[in-house]
Length: 131
Image 1 (cartoon, helix red, strand yellow):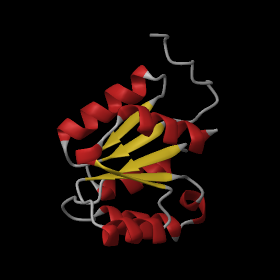
Image 2 (tube, one colour; image 1 turned 45 degrees about the vertical axis):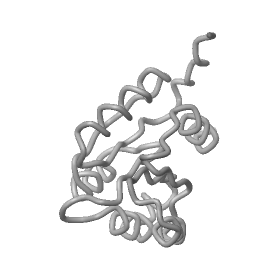
Image 3 (cartoon, rainbow, N blue to C red; image 1 turned 60 degrees about the vertical axis):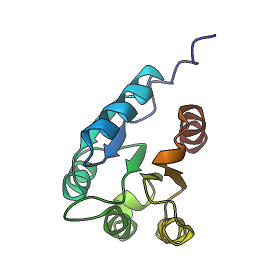
């Protein structure tokens, strides 16, 4: 199979916000092998702090985290003019239509259920959002 196309260097890094070490490592591996630079945050609070310190091209965001959950991170990002423009793809184990609707209503641009995780579709969605 052909190697994936090189990611233009002008694309800012992606921030993965997930309390699950396994998920963070999996997403980091997929993204880095596709040529993206990746930062990691283990909580919603840490994710927002990092988002304020560095410009990101995209956030991959879990919903179920201790403390601040992903929906609250989305709410706060939407209320912040600097963060509002950064696309968010929610990656969660929660597959209900209500959770999906809530995420999209709060500004998420994509919604991936971990049980239906497809690396090719995720990378295509990220590529579409980052141009």
